[in-house]
Length: 188
Image (cartoon, rainbow, N blue to C red; front, side, top):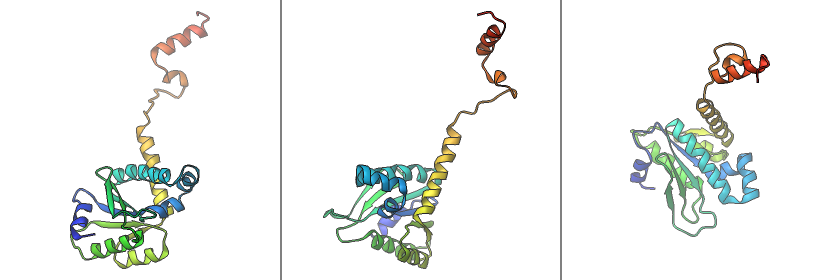
């Protein structure tokens, strides 16, 4: 990754760059692990992407999900999914760990860079990430944060039902109240 690539990854509108070891998350999150076994790796990758798109947008993070080349013999490639989230596939033979280490080294040498957060449960990666001055999240910590963000978003999206009193009747619209009164008085 050139220094220009790091410039593109970190734009002033973002408060942090989140690098996610994709296969590490799939192996550690029960939902994703189950999905991988039931529907295949592509489904698990898609679900991880979906979850992180919502999380990144709510947090103001630029997020790059890094996947090892795995069985692909293609050159490194990147897919930009939203303004906030991209997926990066390493070169054949390059691990996600190596890519993340290189990104941390470039981050360490820059003074104009916002926070760098790396999500992986790889113990050796944790030490490297912290050694370069970046922040580290385990797979479980990221999963908890993603779930909390999802719950908070759901609460905000639920319509607030204002009740004018403590009885169910008072929370009904006027037509329903009138109909209920008719039923109570025996006038159908």
